[in-house]
Image 1 (cartoon, rainbow, N blue to C red):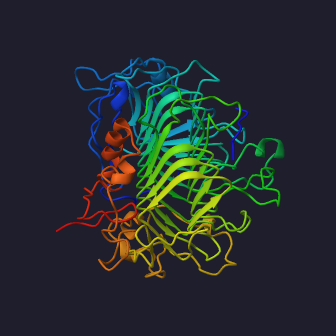
Image 2 (cartoon, helix red, strand yellow; image 1 turned 180 degrees about the vertical axis):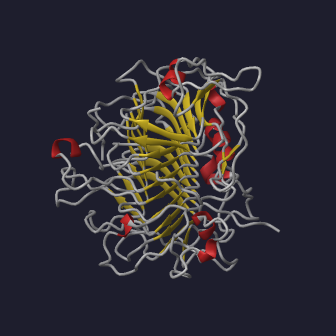
Image 3 (cartoon, rainbow, N blue to C red; image 1 turned 45 degrees about the horizontal axis):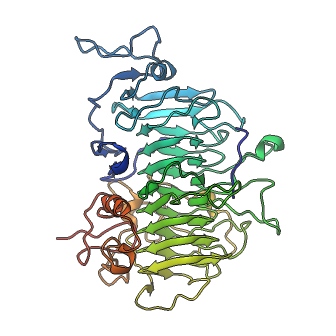
Length: 519
């Protein structure tokens, strides 16, 4: 599962009330950013914190600023990036930006002054890959091609890999990078990937239809493609001994990922990746061995992952991770995958926690929760399985729930075990997403926004997931396993659902990524 590098389409109708946040950096001096609304159906206000402006038709002879008369003279994206200093906010005007090669931020910020690349707010910022099948990511935050550029973040951008870019965003050998409210599609690998990075946050992104390799692609280049997941954190670093959160994957929607790698398969010739989210090796478990005083703390929370070829969420040879309030729905749709993969999959890991999750398996043979290899110190609290069960004993009725969670209006998938390839047509939140309740009208039950998010809400208080969750930071067993830093940071994420609705224990703490409305 280690990814070694040589190294979207416009969504006019998506999430309603999708709110990015929170952006806390407790230990290292960062201040919270303002909450940012990302709603592709309603125009957001224009950004007012811009220090440099860029446009698809910008001119590097311009100064990139707004003049006293209100006129803006934008630079190109590369020209604006070259002008950045710690604290710079590069605002990109709406338009189509073609990338013939990877965009590499030339400068980094500081813990108190991040460099930000964001949507100005006047329309979609569409970054389109035109660099061909060259095993290059679209945006590369990599210490191998430039000095380390930490403290860089990207907000509200739309990336279309055109089927040939390797990844959307990729961090390699860097630290302190954030990806908020972006839409990434049509790459040959991950939407957001990292390798040998620390302090990485992916929040409120929509990642769809990635991992595909075109027929006839050069096999010498194709070998670097596809053996990854929608969001992949690989060979995770521990750059310091901070005992709070280092790695955060929160409030994302991931759909339609697949593993089509030609030569990275198991001993039986089956693909092993192509899932939604993976924590894939910590530096203290992957060679060369690097001893960390504290393995990098990881939180995977409030994600909705459905319709992918591989697993939903996987933890492979990692430690000190928390997987909380996620919704996994009918993944494992690629019949070329290794058999009996799980929705929530665990391999050779330790000190892990699965809390308040929902797992709906596509087939009985695909475990809702699975383990492989040697695992230790693993805790499962308040998880639900439907459509399948566990690959291990999970009979404690106090901690395990079974039964249909009774979602409002989920996307439609053919239940036949021979119906291969449905990941290809699995769609992100958009007009035309078919549902079981209205397949002819397609999305009728989701107007006015057609948001898949609402479809994964609980339809009834009779659902076994209804108000069945717990606050892990106050549970006597789980809270004792957290440092004070980790607990404080986790609370800033778990006390709201993917839509920003407040989640309160014993009131509306449902299992999964959504909390029901309290009258």
